[in-house]
Length: 133
Image (cartoon, rainbow, N blue to C red):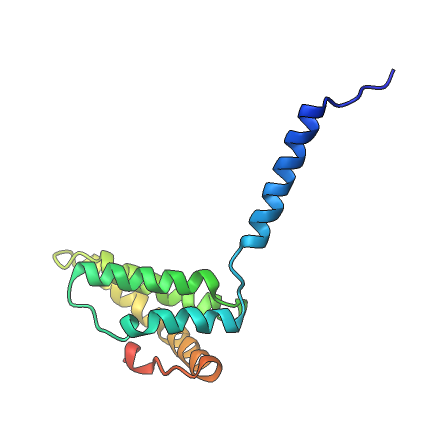
């Protein structure tokens, strides 16, 4: 005896498959062109040195948006930079170990920041070297 799927079940499965396919298509493209477009939208504020906790959080949010669209060749260096920014933002000035952890993260990110800024200059024509200097 052959079992036939009920029409309602078939429709539910088809809808789920379509939703997954659409979500995959809606993923932000990780191309250099798209990255440069997002960078262009974020760059005026990225160049401003933060002076408050809110501005630091805003800066991290901007870099996280860049990380979401970063091409694979710069994803890891940019992730290291974002992690250093997070460490700095989370440092407790009254706790020497916390401050040292943030300093260590900054030193670890130095080479990756250079890789990232060099790639951005070469690919997007944007000079971010002063942002990290």
